Length: 490
View 1 (cartoon, rainbow, N blue to C red):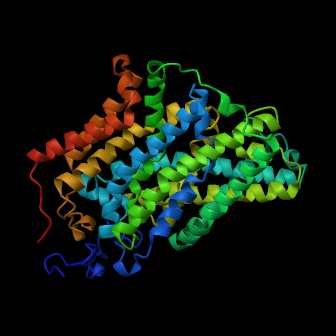
View 2 (view 1 turned 60 degrees about the vertical axis):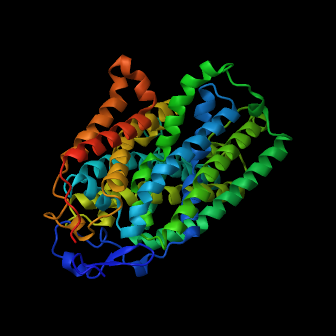
View 3 (view 1 turned 90 degrees about the horizontal axis):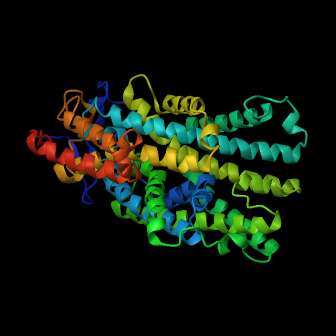
């Protein structure tokens, strides 16, 4: 134990406070944001692998290759882009996972080291708003699954409550709100329930998708015409201008988790276990599940005369209510698992970080859900190209800038050493705001997004995540060379 800091440093490098009660009076502390005691850090390699498998087994992953193939890629190019993007984003994910396991702290508390105890709200709220959009997208997909299920069981369901509005029937809106409410219910039950859901959802969804794949290939008597399509790019010079923004968008798919993995790794039993679980599960699952989507969709072109990328609509073609019920239950489970893990845990903590004394994790989850509705996810999903090249590509630049600052601060400036107690004290070693972090973040965002308004900078927008990450991280490290660094106490 370090008597000056009140920290207990364990042999494996994990750190905890000897007495967390000293923080109870701090305005920056609540039980949801508190460092997890080592005794409660129980997540294993399987828990992290199951987390990623269940998050990757979602409808947007299944449909990911469709947007790339619509842009002119063949299936091999699309799957290669997906695999490479997820391998690249694994690097910042693992770098930002380390402080979670070492100190037991969630993402917004970790961000206090780089941005200051008040300044941490800048990256936290930027991350939270993206998550709210994703929450809405997944809730809409889950609502579609419920709608399809109800329609199979009750054929009159679509017209039961009238024509509705905005191109959707009243029962479509009702199904959406029912699934939305299910998400909020699970959040109010707590993180341990989430861990249990992820553990059994991961293998279950994989098995059901495999069954669907076997059925599709057998019915089509082959794997169909999509795999025979050559793509429209005959030379590398034609392929490259589409490949780069597509790769950036693939990185953007999990750019959110590259920031807030401490929200999960704070429960990790060891650094080795959280690293192994993530390395084994993320790139492989994204590749395999997207490949399943390509194969099933290709077979559907033979079976139904059209390529159906949306598995909810594909299952809706079946007439056996039992088959539809089982398939839609699988979609609901998959969507629920990814939505809560990827899109609620982080913003709930982020909103709690804004006003720790007044906003709990549960309240933060409710706020996430309400903003998710306000962002109108049905519009985001209306256009596959807009989904990839506007939504994913656009926000990746901002999140890349934050990732660059966090990684430069933790690994280069502070060399993984944090003052755990000061992260919860308004007048501690980290101060209220760190101007260097704010300037670096805005500079990275400006360069990444500049192509939207300045034509000459358009190539930078295609590389949005990379530009934001390296520009912000490099500038931050440079600025911190000239700014006196308060050393951790002791």
